Amino acid sequence: MYIAIEGIDTAGKSTQLDILKNKYEKAVFTKEPGGTNLGKDLREMVLSARAKSKVAEMFIFLADRAEHFEEIVKANKNKMIISDRSFVSGVAYAKDFPLEMVLNLNAIALDNTYPDKIIMLELSEKELSARLSSKVNDGIESRGIPYLLEIQARMKSVIEGLKLSYLIVDASLPINEIEMKIEEFINE
Image 1: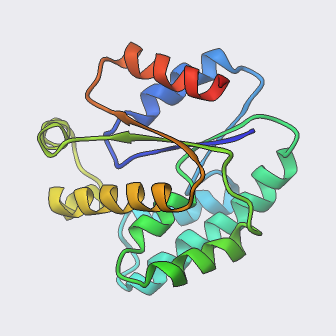
Image 2: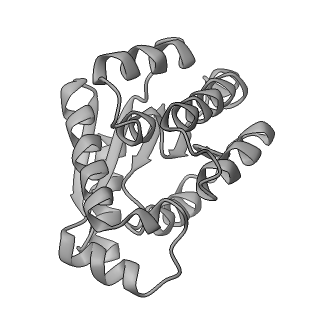
């Protein structure tokens, strides 16, 4: 099974992934961007906001996704794979481009292979504001709350529109409550 954990920065993905690592010790844990050697370099490019062109940023994500699919997803197709982000984030962050075009480019990068289950942690504007104010923001987070909320809305729209199996969880719930919802969804 291929599972993706989605959500904008500070939504609690890392916390839930740490919990899942303890529960599913034999699973392959990965992330996009940055789950491969090439991906680590590409992730640094994205987080440091080195690409000034939106087209370049989108293709950096696509290059990472294609490499990630080949090295991680395809190579471990008989194992449980749990990924911190997936193509959903790539499509959401490429918000300046037509959705159909971005979906088609991602289908090429993924050889039309999508997660079996997608879990999205969703934040309210108030909760996002509180979480961002308590940390140093990276290049993406520095784009501001309206930008991140727009990305979150696009993530949700992509997930709901593709008719994949998904769960959307209020990220402001207690950690253990989120954990239980995720575990139920994975095991159903």
